[in-house]
Length: 183
Picture 1 (cartoon, helix red, strand yellow):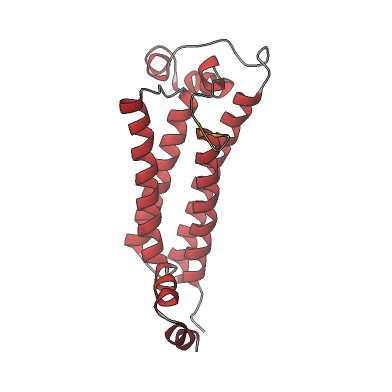
Picture 2: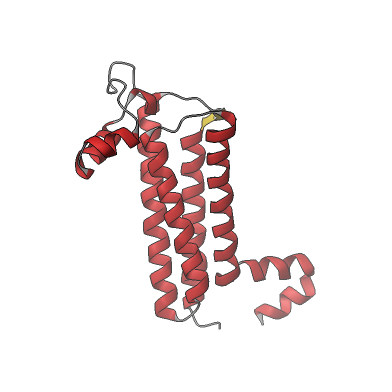
């Protein structure tokens, strides 16, 4: 019955209905992640914006989310697999959104509250242990507090955070929906 209304409603509804199926949605979401990552690298290598440690962690989270979406597209249906992929999508997106939120917090702290400017991430990885590097990155550096780029009044971490929330919510919905029987 649900498919019949799509036929009478016209082509746009059919296209939207197909995109909201789990496999096409996961492929589209993975492509969106790839475009966002491409823009991050464009901003770094062409525009000249140097990423801070939290920016790099956001990129890692976006790569992880892209891999989860690709895995969900490849693994395909089945109630258990779809729910597992929905859970992985939610956890990965939530992690990325949390990193973005922490970065936004660093950008909005008064000058005396964030840590003094520190070394870049590659130096910290070479010199310190993994846990020390992680702690220093999340403590924040002066670099993490700078807003070098903004669009419509929002910094890059704010936009990335919104993408994590949107992609995560839509990914959980699409994959969870695929686990239900189609009646």
